[in-house]
Structures are given as structure tokens and as C-alpha cells.
Image (cartoon, rainbow, N blue to C red; front, side, top):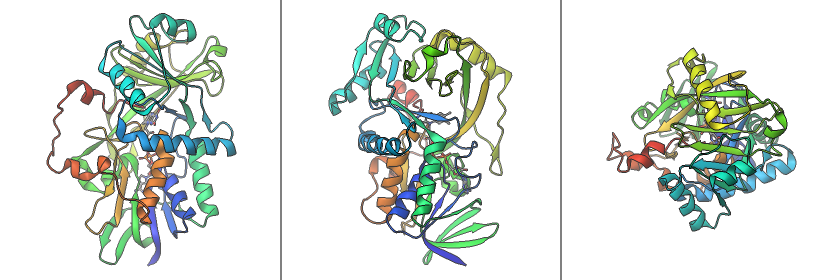
Length: 392
Ligand SMILES: Cc1cc2nc3c(=O)[nH]c(=O)nc-3n(C[C@H](O)[C@H](O)[C@H](O)COP(=O)(O)OP(=O)(O)OC[C@H]3O[C@@H](n4cnc5c(N)ncnc54)[C@H](O)[C@@H]3O)c2cc1C
């Protein structure tokens, strides 16, 4: 049986960075990836992800977010265009809990932001449908990350530091007293420790996760701009539109023409056949997208010209899970990023590596113990709970 100090299962958003950070620390590490690095059947797909610094999702994320910002800036210095700080605009109902949380976060952590009334939003950002009575929070440090570019880069850098990458799925993970056996169709591996970063497919490898998290699918849509100049990163921020009866978010046109918007359709459960899922976008999805896009952005052709559908694992309380799953602390799950993990993927990968080499300990905010007494979590605050995983 082949062996190494560490294994990383899944080289998607977080696994790619965990691989790099482990290799950089001199750990003999092997990564297994089922669909190829930067693949389009994972939460890496869809070209870009939003980065926001004014973060209503709460203080638990502050350290990771700030570190992620430093690391994305470093990446962009090497790979121009990998992280574009075009700003982030959150349009939310005035006086809502969402607005309260944004302000509380900004004040607590001294994050720069600007509160714009509806007319100021319309004047500064005429691409957006007039927000009516809603308000805008302008977060100048926000922007987007080019997903497949940075994931490929992290894996390439890991290879330079001596990591091994195997294009095969892990079939089973079996922790034992002498290490962790990972089974593949081409033989088994034994590792001292393993990171499981298999995204939506994590419950297939760690069945206990079925109790605390659910894999779901989210449709992404791209619309053609009638006046492309207004939809480029030089003129348009990434955005969240909350309060129009749905939670939409998106990014400027990376190719200069097609504007990406997610959240116009309802999420649905991901059902896996082996590791595959149904990638079809339905006529209902298209109808929802067409009906809702005018409530978000002006001057777009209303039927999407491109669609895609991506899987993600959502924990029942919407918070990350980064914790050991076994008493011997050999198998670390880094998963259930619940619709908001990419912006911090680099910092999560670093945290995971630091935990594995003993430089850091796991953060109880992301621990499994929180589920111990609440197999079926019940929301104490219905509004906050309803939005806990509607992030981006
Ligand atoms: C539509 C959509 C929009 C989003 N928008 C944002 C956003 O704007 N901002 C933001 O911060 N976050 C956003 N997110 C969330 C973010 O993309 C995810 O939280 C993050 O990418 C999840 O990373 P991951 O490493 O857990 O999973 P993934 O990136 O999916 O990686 C898992 C990897 O594991 C591999 N794998 C699975 N099973 C196996 C196996 N058995 N063996 C080997 N390999 C395996 C997969 O092929 C994949 O490469 C969005 C998510 C979706 C779906």
C-alpha cells in the first residue's frame, strides 16, 4: 500500500488551497480529485465568486475574511485579474435585520462602508433596477475572485512544493489506529491524516454528515447586456439584491458582455448518482429568471444566454464545518460552506494546514459539537435563520 503523511480528498475550492498550504509547510501530501482540477461539476464552476468585506454573516468569519483579503491581494499581484476589487453593493430593505447586521458588523470591526439611499443608488449605479424604498451598502473592498484560475494556481504551486495529485475519486475513507486508509479504484493509500474537502459530495464519504448538512444545487444565469459599457468591472460592482422576494447576487461581465446573476431560481436538493448529478436547467428555472431579472438589473436581454447548475453542501445552521470527525483526530472535514465559502477558500486552506501541522487548533464556531444536542436544529430567530445560508 502506498503511503504519505497527509491526503486531501477533493481539490476544489478549499482542497486546492489546503494542498498548497500543506506542501508549502514541507508536508508530504497527496491530493485526490474526482473530476479534474478546476472542474465545472463542483462549487468552483461559474467563473467567479463574490468577495465582500462588510459581512452580515457575522463575527465568526472576521479573521478568515481579513486573512483571505490579504491572500487574494497577493494572488492578484502574481496573477493580475485573479481578484478584482470593483466594490460590492448590497441592496437591502431599510430597517431590516439584514441592514442591522451589516451596520453592526461594520461598526464592530471598523470596516469602511457607505450607506446610500435609493436615489443615491440609482444615481451612482444606474445598471440596477431602482431600489424603491430599499437602501444600498457600498463596500469598497468587495469584488470578485476568478475561481478556476486561482484553484489551478494553488494546485500548480502545491506541485512545485512537491505535492502529488491523483485524478481519481476516493471511494472510501477508513480511519484506524495506524492511520487512515483511502480506497481508490487503482489501489489504496495510507495517510497519517486526511482532509476531506469533497464539497457537496462529502456525505457520500462521511455518511454522518447526512444528519447535519444537505447537498443542494443552485442555478447560475448569464444575461447579455444591451449597453455593455455599464456592466464591466470598471463601472459595475458585485452585488446582492435582498428584499425583492428572493436573494439575488452577481458580478459584472467578465467577458465584457455577459452579466452573471445567481439566486433568481430556487435551490433544490442535489441527488447523486454515483458522483454525478442532474445538470439540467428546467423551463421553470428559465421562467423564474426571466420574470425576476428586471427587478434586479436594467438593460439586460431578459432570457439568459448561458446557464449552469452547481452543487454545494449546506449545514443546517448555515455555518461552516471545519473539525475532526474521529476521536483520534486523523480525519479533518472542511466542508458545508453553505453558499459562502469561496471568498475565504485561501484562508480556510491555510487554517486547515495549520491545524494539521499543529500550529493552530480548530475553531469551536465551526465545530461539530454544536450539532451534538440538536439533531434537528430549530431556529430561534426565524428571519436570521431563513437567511443564514443565503450568502454568496
Ligand atoms: C451557485 C453558487 C454561487 C456561489 N456564490 C458564492 C459567492 O459569490 N461567494 C462565495 O464566497 N461563495 C459562493 N458560493 C459558495 C462557494 O462556491 C462554496 O462554498 C465553495 O466553493 C465550496 O468549496 P468546497 O471546497 O467545499 O467544494 P468544491 O469547490 O465543490 O470542491 C469539492 C471538490 O471535491 C471533489 N470531489 C468530490 N467527491 C470526491 C471524491 N470522492 N474523491 C475525490 N474528489 C472528490 C469535487 O470534484 C470538487 O472538485 C457559491 C456556491 C454556489 C453553488
